[in-house]
Image (cartoon, rainbow, N blue to C red):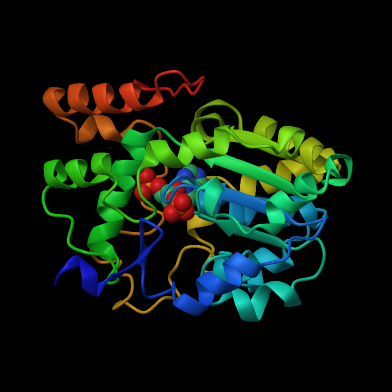
Length: 297
Ligand code: A3P
């Protein structure tokens, strides 16, 4: 099938039309932020589902009920998706949601406090999670195979060309990360990497998020959350592993949604030539920024 059968073009971005409609994008544009909202931003395949597990646990004082009873897409909906309109206003405070949008396509209410000069009352919080783009691409390649609502990615090399050109959902990876590095959000935005959560110290990353969110938890509660959010145990949670989704939408015989959950899987896929091309393109596009990634780990 042609790409156009799967996507809607919105201000230069390809969005899957299974979940994005003109109405859902109007909802996004006119969305009114509240002071106590918590938003997680990711480029697709960077750890969104993981954060949909972590944030409700941190904000609910370690109560596991929401993550064990509510599917991740209802628990922390996507702001730009068609489900958002019916869901977000019904969420109890603090409302939590996720978005894959670049900064410049966020609703104008996100910028308005500053515009009014009320920067000191600018309270909502944003957590931006990024991941090594090589692993993002590998994860996305598998996701395109299993997701019935995305185009056939072709060979890995062909998909790499589409990825580097930004001819994929939510556009170019470098545009996304750069847009969220240059914000007016000051200390209202926290940057976390997938790699620090996985390779270094999940417990420490959760502590950083807690401090940022102005919350505290007992040592025991934080230990239980850390254990629950490990890949192996999260994979067992039917409310988060996408097993509730019909096979026509996500075919788990082709790939699991919670697939490998590791850093460095790219080494199993990249030829030396592709690695050189990828590094060159990404580093040229990040030139002049202070964005660094754990390229080789
Ligand atoms: P892989 O395909 O590399 O396994 P998103 O939710 O943004 O679509 O990202 C999906 C990626 O995050 C998948 O990567 C998935 O396995 C990984 N992921 C989800 N939960 C995780 C966890 N608890 N630990 C490590 N990786 C996790």
